[in-house]
Amino acid sequence: MSTGSKPLLSAASGGSPYGSAPVVAFVNEKGGVAKTTSCVNLAAALAQRGHRVLCVDLDPQANATTAFGISVDQAIEREAHCLLTMPRFPLERAITQTGIEGLDLVPGSARLADCDKALVMEVGREGRLRGKLREFYRSVIADKYDAVLVDCPPSLDLLTINALTAATHMVVPVTTKFYALKGIALLGDIVATLHEQLGASVKLLGILVTMFDKNTALDVTIYRLLKEKVEREFGNYVFSTIVTRSVVVSEAEAGGLPVLLREPESPAAGAYSSFADEVVRRLGAHVDSALDASPELTGAPAG
Image 1 (cartoon, one colour):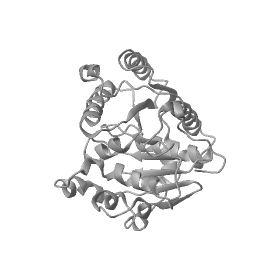
Image 2 (cartoon, helix red, strand yellow):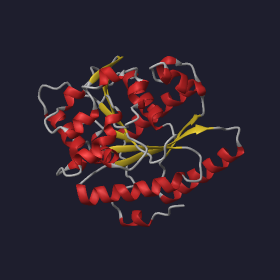
Image 3 (cartoon, one colour):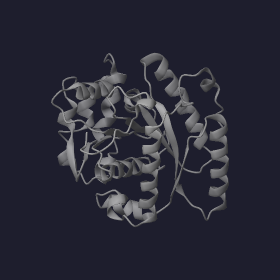
Image 4 (cartoon, one colour):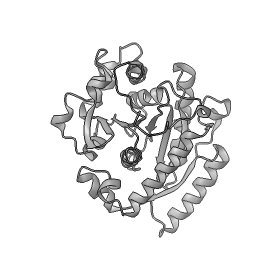
């Protein structure tokens, strides 16, 4: 653990299979919701606060890898595809440095798209990432991370299932579109199945509204309806932080740095800093999630 940093999970939160380290998956079956952007900027924000952070890129598009300035050549021998498909490939071998103090990465590549095919006949294929993380945190020689953040692909495939099976918490980024709650309800059904069949313990940390345009009446209206419906059906899980639409974010990522580091004075950087504050508070508190294996979950409305 980083010198001087406090554990992100308190005893009241029930701890983690990985000591006091939370594993947070960023998941949404919809693309274009700033999932990767939110993951990499939270990673940067936690590192700024003195925590050691590992980011795992499970998306075949490898956008998180690109966002940290890691090239394909750097990633090819240290990638998540090897971690999931090779039983004796340890987590520490997959880790590469990002150049940001306190922040490392398990890079991704297009080869991740082959994982479903490669693992189709393998026993325990849904728990590969969980097993590698447990081995890492049980090791007496590995230098441990305070938090692990996992960027998932925009689909509920085997890669996402691996992330959710390993994760202690999940963040669901959404845009203010009418389909947003449908995806949350579907994700809830998947999580309930993982709890029941695979012994997963992932809980919802929160729903993050991204790419919001406060000057558009439709965005404002849908945000209000979304917040009311989530609070009524799941609980108080919408983060107070709202990330507005900004071209600065894309420009920063194209330059190989999270916006929090490249444009620290920008509104987007400020929003992600506030988001990190909320995440730290929620991780340190006891969080009961409605997205668990409870009977009422399977009846959650989809629209």
